[in-house]
Image (cartoon, rainbow, N blue to C red; front, side, top):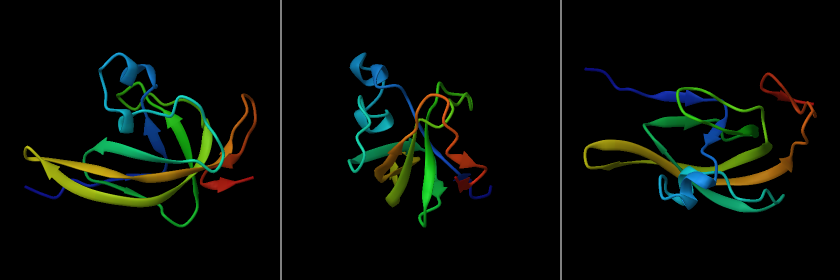
Length: 113
């Protein structure tokens, strides 16, 4: 038995409709509206590590690693691991730095333009 840790180069959350429909907690979903400078809470199942020293892509996930293009750029302000009912979760806060327009290229790999 090993320690399962996932390293995430981006923050992928569900569509806000998943919260509205009662399928997910609000923190598991993207905000309904992206506003530069706003700080939001996030919640992800599993022990996840995020880069804390710069901007990362904020994406929508449909599950099973089906990710959208970057919708915004965010900075992870804090991330904490905790256990509920014998399952590890990661929670934290992120700040929206930039909203990415439809065809705009803002990230080049992990570098931003």
